[in-house]
Length: 316
Image (cartoon, rainbow, N blue to C red; front, side, top):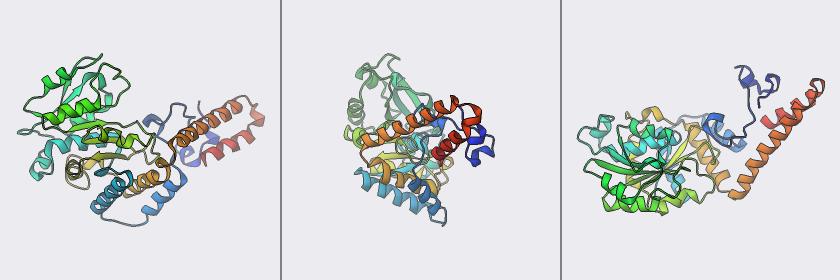
């Protein structure tokens, strides 16, 4: 349902863009989530000074790791940026020559073993770093034997994507981790849209994953262009080495100082709240907007002025 142009906040009205009532939940196509005022204020404050971006990346990662109780963390440009950096980390590590060589993987182990039943459109980001995806199993499922058979001398890691398509037919994350470690390989888990609950920030690490990817602009309610990469310190360092501000394959995936601070503020102020209250709060916002829009649609044109003011309050 679209809102009349006269009721749109001026920043969108100037561009001729209509806002929408989002009944789809927190997703990229609708702009992620709505950031709390504290997050917006922190981003504005961060924009008032210059910083050394390398230092900010390190300090932000240390703060997130301490906050969440995980070994190491790095702020990424969304979960897709996290995928690219995770792939680059297992391909090139912290080796300057290999970092400069990507996406050319000549002489490197470059295969990522992934279950077909967990594939998503966005796993192209893994290939952006130069990796080759080795798909195993079928769309209906996969066995441990399938995964084992696909691991060869060029394998760099196993990949597990938390997908509603997995069902009961695929190999679960903990078993993927066991297989990976038995072959001396890391497991990368993409858990982009699994928050809340907050417990998911440790769930796959506790199951043996070496790197786990999350979106920062959905359930965390941070900036849409942020994400988190959590896991083994050596691999997180390698991911950072392959990213901005360095001259590396991940330089296009830079995260601004404002967005980094916004994500940290969102983690501190929102995600660590009771997740049930958070989920209920999001549902209440959507329900209220739907009700107001339905009431507006049923109101005669000459009586819509009052309704317009109410809608404007929602967007304030």
